[in-house]
Image (cartoon, rainbow, N blue to C red; front, side, top):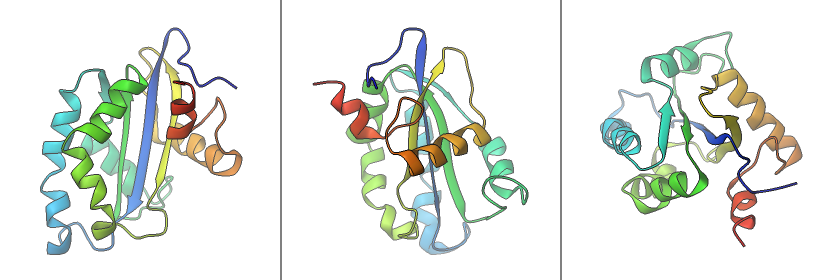
Amino acid sequence: MTARQPAGQHLAEFNFGTLKHDFDDPRIADFKDNLDLVNGLAQNSRGFVWRMLDDDMQDAQHDAAGVFDGNERTASTLSVWEDFESLSNFVWKTIHRKFFDRRAEWFNAEGNSNFVMWWVDIGHQPTVEEAMDRFNHHKINGDTDFAFGWKHLQAGKK
Protein backbone atom coordinates (compact mmCIF):
# COMPACT_ATOMS: atom_id res chain seq x y z
CA MET A 1 0.00 0.00 0.00
CA THR A 2 1.40 3.37 -0.98
CA ALA A 3 0.42 6.74 0.41
CA ARG A 4 2.22 8.65 -2.34
CA GLN A 5 0.30 10.37 -5.11
CA PRO A 6 0.29 8.30 -8.30
CA ALA A 7 1.34 10.03 -11.52
CA GLY A 8 -1.57 11.39 -13.54
CA GLN A 9 -3.88 11.50 -10.51
CA HIS A 10 -5.62 14.14 -8.45
CA LEU A 11 -7.07 13.80 -4.95
CA ALA A 12 -10.84 13.51 -4.45
CA GLU A 13 -12.42 14.17 -1.07
CA PHE A 14 -15.95 13.54 0.18
CA ASN A 15 -17.41 14.56 3.51
CA PHE A 16 -20.94 14.62 4.84
CA GLY A 17 -22.93 14.88 8.01
CA THR A 18 -26.42 15.27 9.38
CA LEU A 19 -27.35 18.65 10.80
CA LYS A 20 -28.95 18.79 14.23
CA HIS A 21 -31.62 21.14 12.92
CA ASP A 22 -33.24 22.08 9.60
CA PHE A 23 -31.33 24.43 7.28
CA ASP A 24 -33.76 27.28 8.01
CA ASP A 25 -33.36 26.91 11.80
CA PRO A 26 -31.56 29.92 13.36
CA ARG A 27 -29.24 27.54 15.23
CA ILE A 28 -27.75 26.54 11.86
CA ALA A 29 -27.57 30.09 10.49
CA ASP A 30 -23.87 30.67 11.16
CA PHE A 31 -23.03 27.49 9.26
CA LYS A 32 -25.45 28.11 6.39
CA ASP A 33 -24.65 31.82 6.06
CA ASN A 34 -20.94 31.10 5.58
CA LEU A 35 -21.15 28.29 3.01
CA ASP A 36 -20.58 30.65 0.09
CA LEU A 37 -17.59 32.22 1.87
CA VAL A 38 -15.93 28.87 2.60
CA ASN A 39 -16.76 27.37 -0.81
CA GLY A 40 -15.49 30.50 -2.54
CA LEU A 41 -12.27 30.33 -0.55
CA ALA A 42 -11.85 26.69 -1.59
CA GLN A 43 -12.42 27.50 -5.24
CA ASN A 44 -9.80 30.25 -5.09
CA SER A 45 -7.26 28.14 -3.19
CA ARG A 46 -4.06 26.89 -4.77
CA GLY A 47 -4.58 23.36 -6.04
CA PHE A 48 -8.38 23.43 -6.18
CA VAL A 49 -9.64 21.60 -9.26
CA TRP A 50 -13.40 21.00 -9.00
CA ARG A 51 -16.35 20.92 -6.59
CA MET A 52 -19.79 19.44 -7.17
CA LEU A 53 -22.07 22.42 -7.62
CA ASP A 54 -24.55 23.23 -4.85
CA ASP A 55 -27.65 22.46 -6.93
CA ASP A 56 -26.28 19.07 -7.99
CA MET A 57 -25.25 18.22 -4.43
CA GLN A 58 -28.63 19.33 -3.09
CA ASP A 59 -30.40 17.14 -5.67
CA ALA A 60 -28.30 14.18 -4.52
CA GLN A 61 -29.00 14.93 -0.86
CA HIS A 62 -32.76 15.17 -1.37
CA ASP A 63 -33.09 12.12 -3.65
CA ALA A 64 -35.15 9.63 -1.64
CA ALA A 65 -33.63 6.76 -3.65
CA GLY A 66 -30.10 8.15 -3.39
CA VAL A 67 -27.16 7.54 -1.07
CA PHE A 68 -28.47 9.97 1.57
CA ASP A 69 -32.04 8.54 1.57
CA GLY A 70 -33.47 12.01 0.95
CA ASN A 71 -32.45 13.32 4.37
CA GLU A 72 -32.90 17.09 4.02
CA ARG A 73 -30.56 17.71 6.96
CA THR A 74 -27.61 16.28 5.08
CA ALA A 75 -24.75 18.62 4.30
CA SER A 76 -21.96 17.35 2.08
CA THR A 77 -19.03 18.32 -0.10
CA LEU A 78 -17.40 16.46 -2.96
CA SER A 79 -14.30 18.05 -4.45
CA VAL A 80 -11.07 17.34 -6.31
CA TRP A 81 -7.65 18.83 -5.54
CA GLU A 82 -4.31 18.70 -7.31
CA ASP A 83 -2.61 17.15 -4.30
CA PHE A 84 -2.67 16.44 -0.58
CA GLU A 85 -0.84 19.64 0.35
CA SER A 86 -3.42 21.83 -1.40
CA LEU A 87 -6.37 20.18 0.32
CA SER A 88 -4.59 20.10 3.66
CA ASN A 89 -3.69 23.80 3.46
CA PHE A 90 -7.30 24.72 2.71
CA VAL A 91 -8.77 22.54 5.46
CA TRP A 92 -6.34 23.35 8.26
CA LYS A 93 -4.80 26.75 7.43
CA THR A 94 -7.75 28.90 6.35
CA ILE A 95 -11.00 30.10 7.89
CA HIS A 96 -12.37 26.65 7.04
CA ARG A 97 -10.60 25.41 10.20
CA LYS A 98 -12.71 27.74 12.38
CA PHE A 99 -15.90 26.24 10.97
CA PHE A 100 -14.52 22.71 11.18
CA ASP A 101 -13.73 23.25 14.85
CA ARG A 102 -17.36 24.31 15.45
CA ARG A 103 -18.92 21.28 13.68
CA ALA A 104 -20.32 19.84 16.93
CA GLU A 105 -22.57 22.91 17.22
CA TRP A 106 -24.31 22.08 13.95
CA PHE A 107 -23.90 18.36 13.28
CA ASN A 108 -25.07 15.27 15.12
CA ALA A 109 -22.23 13.58 16.97
CA GLU A 110 -22.89 10.26 15.25
CA GLY A 111 -21.36 10.35 11.83
CA ASN A 112 -19.65 13.67 12.50
CA SER A 113 -16.46 12.43 10.83
CA ASN A 114 -17.82 11.07 7.56
CA PHE A 115 -14.79 11.73 5.42
CA VAL A 116 -12.84 9.86 2.75
CA MET A 117 -10.26 10.57 0.07
CA TRP A 118 -9.09 8.66 -3.01
CA TRP A 119 -7.06 9.19 -6.16
CA VAL A 120 -8.85 10.01 -9.41
CA ASP A 121 -7.58 10.37 -12.95
CA ILE A 122 -6.89 13.98 -13.89
CA GLY A 123 -10.09 15.39 -15.37
CA HIS A 124 -12.41 12.92 -13.60
CA GLN A 125 -15.34 14.40 -11.69
CA PRO A 126 -16.60 11.79 -9.22
CA THR A 127 -20.27 11.17 -8.55
CA VAL A 128 -21.89 11.05 -5.13
CA GLU A 129 -22.50 7.32 -5.65
CA GLU A 130 -18.81 6.75 -6.37
CA ALA A 131 -17.90 8.81 -3.31
CA MET A 132 -20.26 6.87 -1.05
CA ASP A 133 -18.80 3.58 -2.36
CA ARG A 134 -15.35 4.84 -1.41
CA PHE A 135 -16.60 5.99 2.00
CA ASN A 136 -18.24 2.61 2.73
CA HIS A 137 -15.10 0.76 1.63
CA HIS A 138 -13.00 2.91 3.96
CA LYS A 139 -15.44 2.44 6.82
CA ILE A 140 -15.20 -1.36 6.48
CA ASN A 141 -11.54 -1.79 5.50
CA GLY A 142 -9.75 1.24 6.91
CA ASP A 143 -7.01 2.91 4.90
CA THR A 144 -6.28 1.22 1.58
CA ASP A 145 -5.15 2.53 -1.78
CA PHE A 146 -8.83 2.47 -2.83
CA ALA A 147 -10.03 4.82 -0.06
CA PHE A 148 -8.23 6.48 2.82
CA GLY A 149 -8.17 9.18 5.49
CA TRP A 150 -5.69 11.84 6.60
CA LYS A 151 -3.30 9.50 8.41
CA HIS A 152 -2.71 7.42 5.30
CA LEU A 153 -1.40 10.42 3.37
CA GLN A 154 0.47 11.91 6.31
CA ALA A 155 2.31 8.59 6.71
CA GLY A 156 3.50 8.87 3.10
CA LYS A 157 5.11 12.23 3.81
CA LYS A 158 7.61 10.82 6.34
